[in-house]
Length: 188
Image (cartoon, one colour):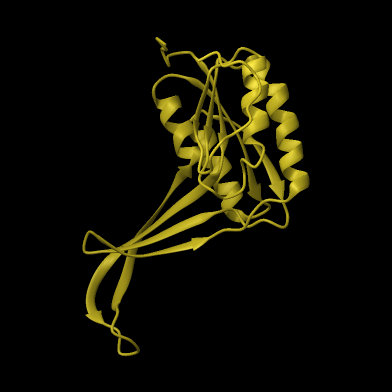
């Protein structure tokens, strides 16, 4: 398959996360435990997971839409802002019971010292609404990218592949689980 990203309409669906970085200097060990004390000097936020995949496709010149689930929280709003800044069209379903996945990395002396993960799985109702949006968005898509990080956002992955194939859309998938029983005829 010869595929050019420039101006391609790419639909990225999957688990998004907010990657946070705390950078600082280490000059001593804590008196409370044998761990370094990091004096944080700067912080960064970057799109992670499927959001990073969407960002990279947009950087290659594609017209990217991102479909995912986030919490009704500050991290979800930050992720939406970051994606908008990257010229990615976002459809983020909000789940009040979900905390947007955050991967917080603490870095001292150019070395990652610690990673702290905040994550919960989305509700069944929100995932059904996302599947309906997926079906609607297919008509304006040239290729579908399913980016699974095992956070529960692609529980309907088999159905998504079937729908994309029925619509004649190529599908690129990186699943965390074995996919079986896709009934539609492959097009790619």
